[in-house]
Image: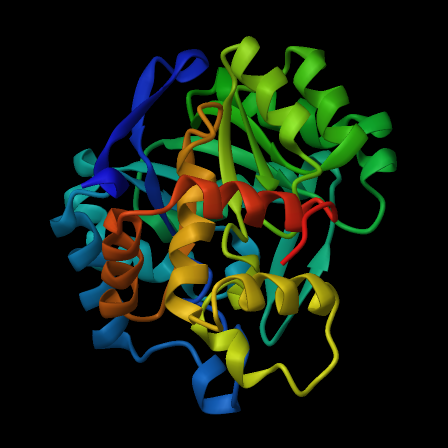
Length: 306
């Protein structure tokens, strides 16, 4: 299956499955819909989802300190299968359930990495990423976060370094030579990071994609929100018109849009349900009209006609 095809990250000297698992929703209440729909799964279900993800053959799991119970649950339910997956987490935004807070000081980052290691029940984190907050420029300029990450790397607590950021600052970090992986937002409705993806590929830097289906706006779910206002609504309407209001076709096109981008290493698919994860896998197998995809890409760029 396309979702399980492996793409090489040169800087990490490894391959990752095209679909990775974004572990936000198994640890933190999140998403669109009712409070019940946003609620994280119960313990047994979280364990079932994590083990089922590995059973499918997915070999990348991405989490963060800010995802509340996520790291703990990964450690609890799949640490015994540690050799089956590449483990990525983040630091800088810290869990204080039900809220989070930011602290990018050297001390806080070193302590956060140690705490993550304990919760994840592992000796080493494959990829540690900066989880930027409202003042990313300041974090970069002060340099304490990166210094702490590099020291953790020297201590063999982490293997590779990454950052979750977009736009001009992402370009700056790609060019710095300090990072092995960049995590960026990229989808049909937001194609602004295309040049960053291409630049990262040139330099052998891995690219992980977050919000690849537009936080649900590029799936059938959006049909239930069209009577409300949200950013990008006009382009969503045009995409739906192009597809005769077929939400599943929109979802499939959104996934194929990512698949055809060679610079993308892995798309992080987050789900509380293994059935929904499999649905994404199956939709990527759906045969797509390439002319329709080109029209959808143009709409996402604000150019095309529905």
